[in-house]
Length: 278
Image 1 (cartoon, one colour):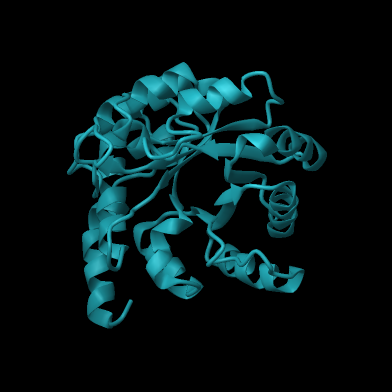
Image 2 (cartoon, one colour):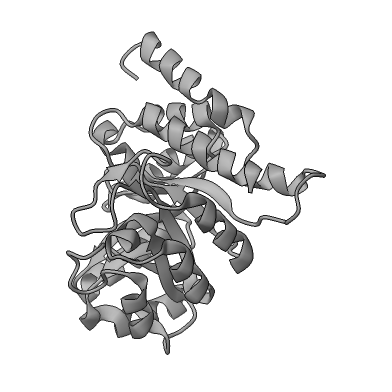
């Protein structure tokens, strides 16, 4: 944050988020009708504007009480050595935040695949969020078995000629090792004209990660918005989460310009509010 005033704004905006229980807390509530096994997390791309300032990322996550994150390469560089990785991962750990995955990582060659698995092993995570080309899928499967690390292939919307939505991912991986799965980006799925809740239920057995956001229209040029201000039916999606038995991370991915802190707080508060009321 650039000033104390900015930080106060974050805390104020996150009051709803901190007042509402997390999904795990809801599961323990005597008023809860179901047991929730998924957790609210955040995608590292959200903090692009902070570049490699880990302290700022941690400050925001602590303010909104989010305890899980997947990192991008500007937070944990691909060429990090073991000592560098331990320092960065250690900062999150000391703050009570778990680095659960890495990505999105773009895989165009077998060398890219090798680097990605070495990178994940160095960071001590068990999930790679990836965007591979078709030509490396078999090699990626081989390395997933070798390292025992899951790969969640990310859908990137109508512009993506390889994997616009998760049906196209499933078609390529359905006969592959179970460690190869899907990262469902509900915003990109919605821009493809699909209902994210329906897609989740259809492919629930192979969805290992997800990116949560809201979009203003189910069209290719749909714009990302703060959750609750767009057209995605988040209530319906939470009901699908509960019905599916999903047990992974629900990572907020905030993609608007400028400092993301206030938007993250509002998204977290909205999602937790839906959890509480559903």
